[in-house]
Length: 196
Image 1 (spheres, rainbow, N blue to C red):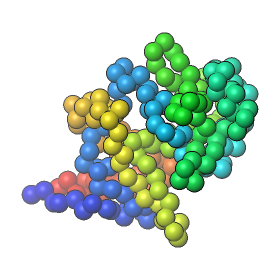
Image 2: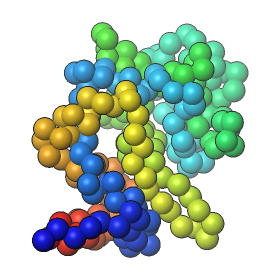
Image 3: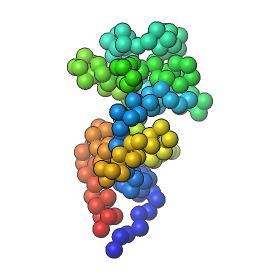
């Protein structure tokens, strides 16, 4: 017998949408080419600590950035407050993240590329690593996690369904980076109990 999954679960003090357990997702870079870095109307959400990490890595990634991105950073910095008042990475032309660089047709994150080559200690904002999960901060320090549906990720949904890979399993590493190994194990336990 399958138990009905409640819409919101409390896992270690973090409120999560049950979609993280029930929906399937796996990025398909061969098809999407990293379009999430260049589509949208705002940059990636960032924290003040992340801005410090980005600024520390800026000299290293600077040569990888477009002239337009460099001009935006010179003018307003690596981040700004969007229309909702959230702190986000700066963007070029109203949509492209300033840290987007290209490898042929593929969009890459200059920050992550430098990190993977051992040139910096900062990888990329956790909001990027967690996508399609979006984190929301509530009063009293409560954190909520939701699954964000975006049409540019339709190939990722299809691939996730083919692999039968739940969102929370696909994002194991960034979830551990954000909340720790013990919290992630608790999430897995909750997911297993609900699938009985």
